[in-house]
Length: 417
Length: 91
Image: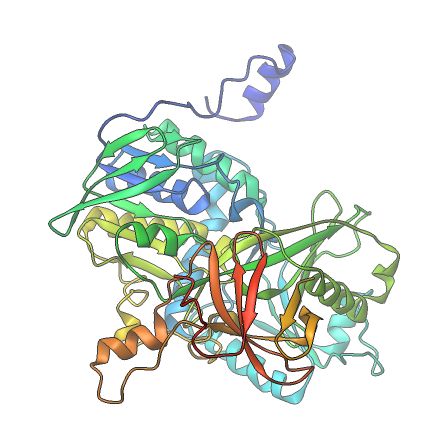
């Protein structure tokens, strides 16, 4: 069924009791042309683009819990493409372009809101870095705009722009097309659209083993039995190392917990995404009215999907230093997700050294905004057996070859990116 | 908040410590082949379970220590001075 004003009106007449299910819940078939492990945004997008762009619809997406229950539902919903290095800039710009048309493409309202992403500048060194990055973005055809302190004070009246602020604000780099997307809707929209093209979405189905014979994938063992396939794609960021280990591989990745939190909901007070690299803090207001905040990793390896209080305190104190008026709000919920932190801070999208095995992962802090391009390029890599020009740089081999893509210049210390 | 048993100072709060990463990686010999260096610099087991890791008591005695911690639960299973532990690596 196509969602439209007419279907809405028709279903209103039946008290919304006759909406069809958005996707099926099939038992897995014994064999597929491709199996995608991970039913988050990345895995569902991979399956959708395999079916849509490459005509490969005999595909299963295997999810150990329910779709969108991992990082897709745990991020701070920010989308942007304000990167300096060329491979990252072009990759994330493809993603932002896909976000802009995604609701129409999927016939599902993902609530993309181009409210702008503003990176605050607190020091002359920050200023040089912001100018350099802004100019690099514009050379790559990406929107970037430098705002003076006065312009920021006018646009965001509750941000402390006074000279006496704990972190004085000298200006900021704005990407107007950046913004937020309703994260759960991304999983649901891709799931519904992939299912409509014939993809089987199998929930409560955990992969327990990868079968490899003669250097090639032959199938996966799961909690719902063995599934034969010659092509397996991992889209399991946070757990990429665990899946790769089932195929005998070690990855340049560590798993770390990243926390986020929301305040109680209030009337509209903040219509832009505001971030500060210097204090490592980002904030936006959801459509429900909650202020959504995040900051640093917890800085030690973790698979626990929750964090510790010192980071909560850090995030809240950064928030109050920048927005003193938010001091009356209460933190309503905190949670954690597990990030694949790579050795250069950039993702891995491509073939693994086992025939038929691919991955999209290693997302560090930036997985949600990458979802459409990640799926698009992962699908291309699976269908063609070779990467698309836009993910050709994001190989696993780049580490051994010395061709790392280190946006921050932090070196092989995964928790420093 | 983690409580980390420093072998020299006793139980101290996590905020006194700085994380130093996987304690099981070993620097190869200078003339080791390139893939041994790639593994040393870039590749990690990244286990879900007991993990041997280095921490520095940077706001305390400033000594490095080796902590065994379960990455699924954050439970700390023990600590020792840096170097090889008496019972071998966690993995």
